[in-house]
Structure formats: structure tokens, C-alpha cells
Image (cartoon, rainbow over all chains, first blue to last red):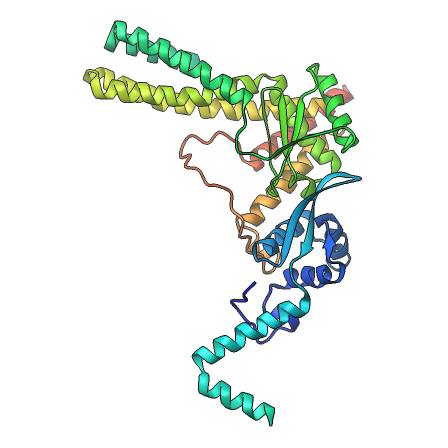
Length: 121
Length: 258
């Protein structure tokens, strides 16, 4: 996933993902594999009004962004979709930093070099 | 109404083409029959997984109970590998997408299945393919009559085509409402159909960005294929269905009290 936006005022991965998607990803990086129902139960504790539809749409959106992948699993409760992470949090953060620095080097090469060398010192 | 329009279309063909008109009608009927057989026996390009009782006994037994109440044979039930909630029926078959299982409760999924069983019981799964493919035959006949008929025939065939489309839309909407009414009578918890439709409406609204402000930062990127329908919409809106279900449930309660 290549981030297209970086919000300077947001903390952590909320700078590159919408708040609810960021919360889902934080949880998914912890559990690695989950159904939408399990994520719904987790999210409901913090957002009591949240609906199953919202979680399903957001998790499938994260699949489209390449952060999650969906597969069909035959479990005790019958067939269901299971979502799993495609990248670790560290890999994701590395990609974010790389994308931002690439963009800075392309658009503000001299200033970026100057600032980075100042930080090194 | 649809019969009358079709009969008038046949008369126009015979009037405009004589014996050739009879041949055309015969060909159209044969084609319609072939398309019907194809539509009810084949579903191509879809990932359908047969439902086995061991996998989901609550769903299998729930549908079996509905079928018993409706006095129809147990339908074949398939699960569709599609994350968007959807359900449809053809022949004696019900298809439920896996997306339904993410957004609805067990009772609500049974309610969606009851609506589809309503279509089977009311024989819509036989009529819908005929009415749908019939429109293409009426369109072909209209084009032929416009190209080679006299001016009155050209006008009459155009009017008949528009009338067919309007009658088809009206017919299919009425059958959707009827399937809901049938489902309400079959379901152990009729309210679950209303709840299911409300949740599916919420999903659709969210998907089409209507409720973006209700949930921060949601801009669903998933879109169903959009079809051009103009005046020929065949499905009533969720609002219309929910309103009718609410009224129907009120009437059912009143009958129980009496």
C-alpha cells in the first residue's frame, strides 16, 4: 500500500489512514487473523453505535488498499470470510517513510538534503 | 397487461409481415423457450458453493422449515463467494452471498432466504426469466416493425414497446412486494425481515456515500455494476419495502387480536 496523503495533525498511522481504518489495522496487527464479526465485537467496546455493515465495508476497503487479504474458511459456524494482514506494522511504517522521503526528494531535493544532514549532526 | 401487450405485438407482426410474421412469432417463442431453459439450468461465471447441513445446520434447518410451511420442496441453497451482501433465486434454487453473513444476524439471514423462498412459492422464478427475455424479443420485433412497417405500424409498435417496459417494471415490483408478504407469513419472527432490510439499506447508503457524515472518514470504494434503468426500474426501494412490511405487520397483529 502506497500512502497518497499524510495528515500532519494526526498521530501514528492515522496520519495516513482514516481513523476507523487505522483502529482496525492496529487491532489486526495484534491478532493477525480475524473475521469481520470478531473485529466488530472488539470495535463495539470503543464505539457502541458502530454497525456490522460499517466494519465489513471498512475491512473490504482495507483489502482493496492491500493491507488485508480475504479468504473463505470452512469453520465450525459454517463458511465465512477470514481476514489476515498482508504486511507487518514495521514494514508498513517503512513504506510510509520511504514514500514520504521519495516525494520530498522529488519536490524539495535541496531543502530535504539540508535538513537530513542537519539531523545527522 | 403483459399478455395483452404481447398479443397485440404478435398481431402487429402478422399484420405487417403476413405468413412471415407467423414464422417470426414461432421463432421468437422457440428462442424464448430456449433462453428460459438455459437461464433456469445454468449459472455461468459464478463461484457457487452448495450449502451442506453439517456446515450451517441453523440455516439449512431454518430454510427447510420455511419450505415446509410454504408447501414447496426444499430448495437447493448455494453460497456465493461475494463480499457484497446479496441474495437471489432461480428455478428451485436460492443463492446467498457470503457478504450477508458479515452484516446480518442468523434470524435476518433466514428472513432474506424467506423472501427468496417467497419468489419460488409464488412462481416468480419461472416468470421473471420469461418476462426479462421477453423484453428483448419485443425490442427486436419493434425494431423490425419500425424498419419495414407502415407509419401506423411504426407508431403502434413503439407505443407497445414503451407499454411493455412499463408493465414489466410494474409487474416485477408487485412480485417483490408479494415475496415480502409471503416471507412475513412464513417467518417465525416477521420483524427480522424489516431489520434485515434496514441493515441492507444502511449498507447501501454507506456504500453510496449518502451517510458519509454519519461515520467519519468512510468513502466506500466498492461499487456495484450500475445499470441504466430509466423508467424501467424493477426493484422497489428499501424504503418502500420497509414501509409496506411495517403496514403488513400491523395488519397481521390486528388480525391476531381479532
